[in-house]
Length: 186
Image (cartoon, rainbow, N blue to C red; front, side, top):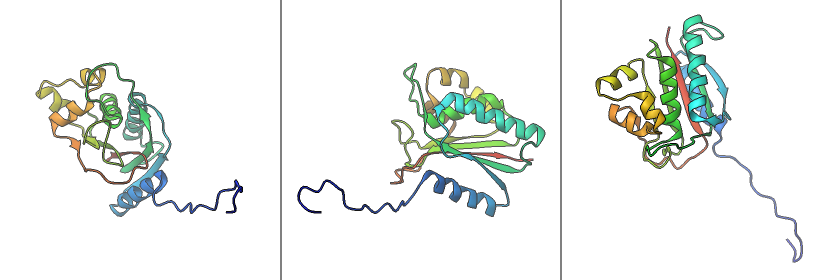
């Protein structure tokens, strides 16, 4: 570049990791396990609790009707959701999404979910995300935890931490997206 030249030199734009690449890697693992994989998208945005409600409704529909996907299958999605903090909970958009999803599923047999941030940190905590199983709400009630209260208080980390369902990976040194996987067994 010559003095006074305002053009920038060419930049190497090789991408090491992208949201799509993260979902494709997860899809490969699921396919190797013999599961059908359906990628819903890598740019799903919105309030985490709303996204969780929609994903839960989709999973419920697939589990109950076998449409538009036959089971067993895995639904994968990514994107950056948001949380409007209303209370003083320990928050996290992935755990808030999962709380809403669990409430929508209401313990539906055969449906499991995982959500986490690819950098290993969901919100301000060392927790990357969490998992939901058909017995999540039942186990919570036995411990005196109410998912609706945790959601209202933006306290997904407290809820899943108390259940032992938090996912802690430590820093991954890669941050491409939030990641969600829903397994729907027959």
